[in-house]
Length: 133
Image (cartoon, rainbow, N blue to C red; front, side, top):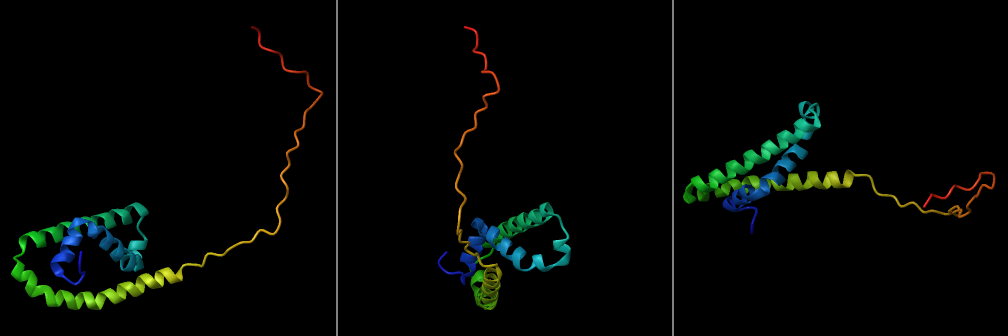
């Protein structure tokens, strides 16, 4: 995909697998804040995410294949306005999530107990019998 701001290329990207990424972004940014979505089981949330990806991919493929190029061209300025308004918000949300994660701390080990390699042999027990030939 050369440009995210081209409507036809964006829809093609969604129809060729990008819908899975878009669904994760929508779920991660919008739905995870909804109380009703948080109350669902993990399996239900996964099912909704997969369903959303499937619907986005199918709808994108239908629009690309069934809409006349002149119509997509007429919608291009409006799509550009939406992308330029939403992309910074999504970038900010993703940056906030990344920066909000706890920092990884490094632990320094100052001393290590030596490993014991001593083998204890009991002399009280009789030796094991040898198997018969």
